[in-house]
Length: 437
Image (cartoon, rainbow, N blue to C red; front, side):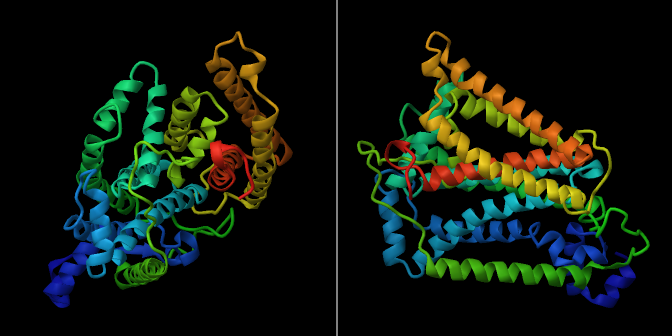
């Protein structure tokens, strides 16, 4: 921004504009201001991180990171500190909403094709930020030191032992010993209040700068052959800033009202000698726990998640038939294929879970073959063959491009994982047996 413009604006307005223009380009395409294009999902995580930082600082004045005092300090906060319950509610729900919003933002970027070309590396940065959000929620989950938190973390960290060679070492390092205790709480507290926030505050500006470097969010297209003649650009201030401000205020109002109505959960104080039945992982990891019931632990905890993460990282570097950036679901055909993928997942996933629970047990049928083969390699091979067959079938049936076919596979796997999480959360009872909720 030139000195002449700054002088005309005045020092305060110039300072504000300079701050904004470090995050956004000076001008943005008029069509990127459409709410239905981004839904404000890119800016919402920043608002939620600010809420979490503010409420987290307030909570630290009362919270005691010790197994003997942690639970009692939460009770003191809720019952004796003015607005203590509300502050904890805002912090708790903001963290959970942050997971959802960050996930939806990743989906928005994928389904509008805003992850290819110059934006490829920013997709990877976005994945790193999403994993940091999960780590933040996971480490914060233990801090109340109630039964729900203690046993959920015990279950999740217990899965680490299935990593060959390094599993027990990694588990002991994260727990600070063999069992979940004082060392675990101290480690989780440090990661939650120092390491993760530091990483977020370093990566988030870099992520925003990368968006700014490519000229802002991807320009929406209303059709495959959308005309490029309507290139109308408007000033970021106030056109984009006002919209971001409205979205931020609406989000804050929603979090506040939600926190006034619903209290953050708190069960009885943690009892290492009494495990609840069933013991479930946090909701954002419960899909992995469901996989644990159908695959050998090595595959459920390590191999399958690593395959998924690696696939997401290399996704923007695959060779696509065309650049469909800005067009939701690539094409009308892509939308139809997406619906078909969702319907397929809704039918096939519960059916496979039911068959796996009651009828098919490769380990029992083939007792002489190692369990990691019958419970892991064999079913994973069947799944991968089915995915490849689905890709070939939909591409041929719809005469689709590889863009549309890859998107269909992505939707199929995403829908299946969501269904697994729903089954694990609502349809698993004592002993993790299938039951009606």
